[in-house]
Image 1: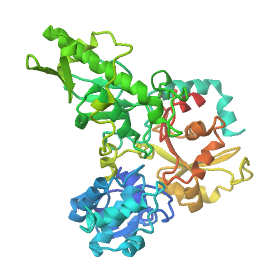
Image 2: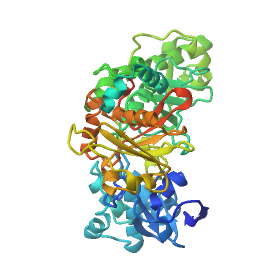
Image 3: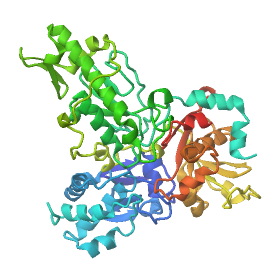
Image 4: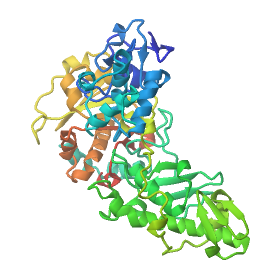
Length: 152
Length: 365
């Protein structure tokens, strides 16, 4: 099976019904994408398909086709992804960090479609990413900062 | 027989677990990031380094490695502890490298608890003085080593950013160049600590050291440790607290390609397979509610499974020695990161890795 992951063509052996998450983690060794709930309720496993956020834990790898996969290991190569990562560090968003790769992926996807989101845009886009450390307020501020709209 | 009873009534394997696990823990995650699939922590080899205590290692290249006695769980202790050490040491904070402490209660016990454990919001309170003493002792030895070389009074020397200076003669030596000489000196038992007004790091709003690798997926959490060829297992317990397994119908699970074994203990069912997806597919609820164990490079057998399951008991070490109960209490706090552990069984012993807040666990088994 072939997939374009982070701009590279990756070939691997996996059944088509295997969720993308386990292809990334267990087959390809890309452990930046996290397993949280396994039922698409927490957002820790968020990756991009053609720039759109999806939960990889329930996405059969055989359903991806020729759409481009971007993971946390590759999102920094995009200008928006790099801005989000920097904003996350500038505002010290992260505590334990386990959910934050998924948060960053969702935030980067939001800023791609909505370059200047307001609070309601952010809340709607990020509602599927939960954080046990409750970093939500800083996440919202960091998204605004990455959009160039935050307080400096 | 319950899992914990099974373990504790098997003294030979307890011995194996105790001996085999020493030095093999990966606590939570690693800094600096290492390649995935290389979970082994570099051994704490002090050969050729200035290592005056359990916390500070300076090698001839000037790399200053600080050993973290406490576990970073998000509260910033992997920044606060280095700040204390580096301030008293006058190290170049921008160049310090962090390393997990191995399980060693003699060296790394939390002074408040007397055991190696992180919790109760007491890391800084507990380690404030020991860390300052460690940094101050190391700094004093480096100053003494430089002063001996220069034939001057140590009191006439100063330190800053990993360099000893003698202002009167304009001489300076990097800590890296003093490794051998300082190592030959006795460790002072009650070194003078800095006057707080001279702190350069403590009390300053610094950037966290653990977060850069948390923005790009490089941090290796316990659940991320991978070994070639290892198997995966999910575990399920009776949903009733203290309940035992009644009947297990594993006929459907056995038909799933990649499922290799179903292990049933009195209070636990484990599904072992080639990939997590194979063993999660049978039951989404099981997947979401159960911790994981990952089995090492050996062929899985029931004894291996129970050994790997036993590593899950390590998660419970902080909440009590009852082990098998508190595994689930840990999960009941709904941390996003599922409890996960990793067992490897080379040559008859067990190496275990997991996200863990207590080296105490190595004693529990």
